[in-house]
Length: 273
Image 1 (cartoon, one colour):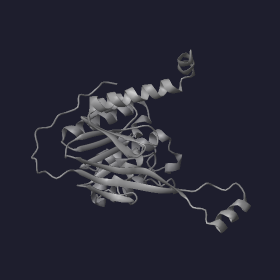
Image 2 (image 1 turned 120 degrees about the vertical axis):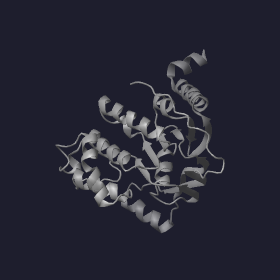
Image 3 (image 1 turned 90 degrees about the horizontal axis):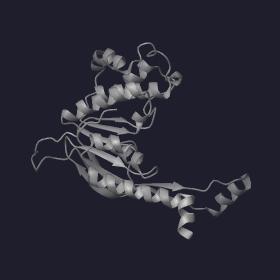
Image 4 (image 1 turned 30 degrees about the vertical axis):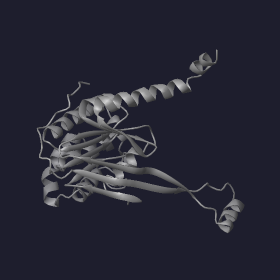
């Protein structure tokens, strides 16, 4: 898979409003220990057992300028998907504020925004219209989207019959063709064959060169280095790094290597000798 050099856009006016503005963002969930028996359930209700707060995202603040390509990195459970869902307006933040300028298209967890009982055609129209397009515009784009997704023979089948790769194809084709100002991709490109992955990467590169705003989360640091000039590093729901790609990725990889070594039984035994 060929690498792309992150495209550096020209100098922008200092007063330009951010494409994405996040201030002191937090999302709290309440976790309750599941009772093992019916009797325990009654005891929990009688004693009013309290739930434990869990902050998926906490105290996160950043601005992203129009045309920036920003990578979001962090271990599983770091808060990347929760952050993206809040940016897309899927749920309300517990604290803080989120502001996104212009149309947003997102490729989040597989199948997000699709209904399994609807056909590919029906899901295409619903998703594109929800993204802000008029029906006549979707009709004009329909063939282009289906051909890009390479789903001509399956577009009238229920989505529940689609493989994970087919769902990713449809989701990406819709997202990239609604002409968003901000494109958000959460690990979805890891699904699918190498041919379509490369097709998606080429289209992302074209998107970036049009001075559009890109946010992409990935565990693949090659992808992050290829497309992003800036990286945000999340850890336990908090922003612990924000800066140039090479600087933040190097720190992240160093910590990841140290964590792997600490869990390696051979390394621990050698340390005791």
